[in-house]
Length: 294
Length: 311
Image (cartoon, rainbow over all chains, first blue to last red; front, side, top):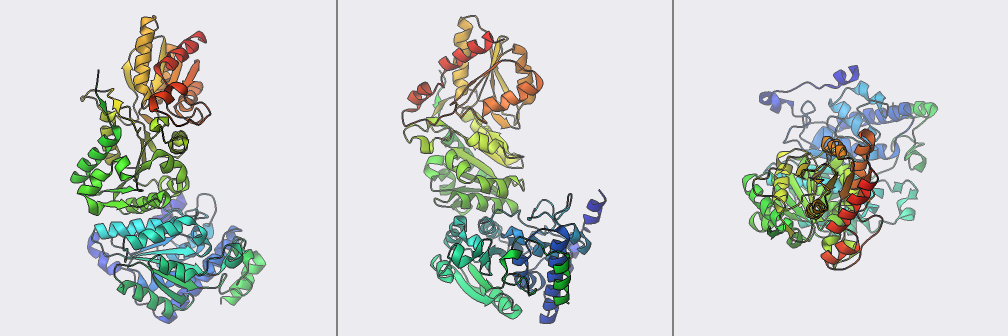
């Protein structure tokens, strides 16, 4: 298959790996530029696919951009590098966001993004770790990512590796009981190399969280489960960066960053609009959105 | 008569031995380590043992994360919780990415006994065998158990091993060599073939012996690996003209269904299935339950005669 050839990533030799660790020096302006590109990709790829989840992808752009372009140690040309910091997408429906970010980092060609959700694409509707370089976990069934991330964190500790594990949850996802099983266990195992980020955009498929299933008092719940809780503006790079730095300092306790975000952020008619949770923009809407994202 | 040996205890001790040799082996349990016998490992190698509490779904996904990071996790609890309780976690966290997680479930079948139907796992094989790429083993005795656990360590990929609660009479000698995906001919015969798993293997042997006295010459196969299934052995069994399966599981989706699928696609012959049919069992002593729910040598003998009559 020709597309598979295109997907093949260059191999790196073990000797030259240090030089290829992704740049950690992105300036605020560079982060903003990357975020804008990623937003444009999300809109165009879901528009082209005719389906997908733009709302919850757009809300977490700054979170994921901060991780991949500033905080995480990783090598796009060596996705399985054992010492890489991990990013695990638990809210698997935000796959367009992860794919766009991975493409902008160089894990896959940007041209691949337009194949989203098509037959034989590397980019499945929800993440598939068998297919996409850089995807750590297959997701889409909500509630499993925090447990998985805890397993990765525990393995790192056993192996005496100093990688950090980040896992992005949706706020609606926190309805799942397994999230709280994992929350309890992460504190019990004192997993201080684990950071959960909740994309707290306030909405889920059937409406506002508070109407569907009230999560509040949300920060108190995490605290009661034994976590360091940090609340930030999830669209503010410097807040996010500070939060990730603070998470690194604490010993013996996992950290949750509750990132207050806006669903559909960056496209006026998608913002706080539950219609764009699981529906793609049509051609006219794509054009309108792209004008806003110029 | 051969001695009765606990499969669970054998599992626990084998796991510890293997864990002493292989640093990558880690073990998880969900507040049942003294029943699943992972406590042997926990005591000696506490840094590689993760007690997950009564939270099986979390345990399975943690195991997946450990496997994705190069570990060889063994996750244990009762079969009923290990499968039904966390089917989606097994499906998405283990089967879909084909991770190297080993689920060893104890208390399979109705011989759990007095605890009753909530604890008697009778659907687990149907559930777990439905998952692409899973290796599924139901050992017949302690000797086979030890070797199945070893095979799970040396073979990459997801495994489910189902063990029974009671001690069970040995079927094999020490020189037995388990082969993943291969049936074992325990007795040759030409009139019919009995294919059995787990505790039903010794019942099958007893039935064959009794039938021999009546002039019916039965072949007996142990089918320790349900997935990948030894299709060649099943097709060959059809040459005897009649097949009877025996298992401590519901009829739907169990050994009988799996064998029937191979038989009808290759060499249709009359079949009878000795199983729990379509019902849950109740509290009782294991031996009483096996009689009540039709899972003894006698029932197998009757099924063989019925199958032969339909030749």
